[in-house]
Length: 166
Image: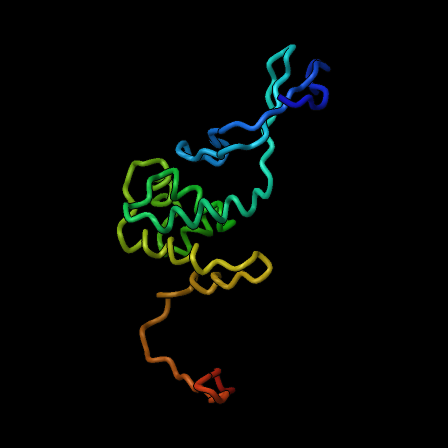
């Protein structure tokens, strides 16, 4: 066991070693981080867990959740909504439902339907860095009457295409 720093609570010596850690701070009860540094105070028992690259960890968790074949559990819906950076109200608008429905999904009072489950997984799969969010377009989908879109594309050569200016 390596010696580390001083405890912030009592000033005792913290000893650090690599351990498996149940990552419940994510809101998910089933996530275990394998071999992360855990510091323990020999005097008061305080522990500190080092989690390097937390953004990458959350992307990996989100990727594993959207790849699982079973329906999303309530805590997974909440984790993915937060991963997208959306409030309950904004998430409801993107999903085409009410904040009350989102609350029921996240509290386990109602199961998210298969179409909504697939839409959430798609939103996460297509997620771009926060500076480039484009999923806001989904908020208005379905508010206008259905009519065919007028689309024009221009060849860029080598079988590539791009939208042409109208």
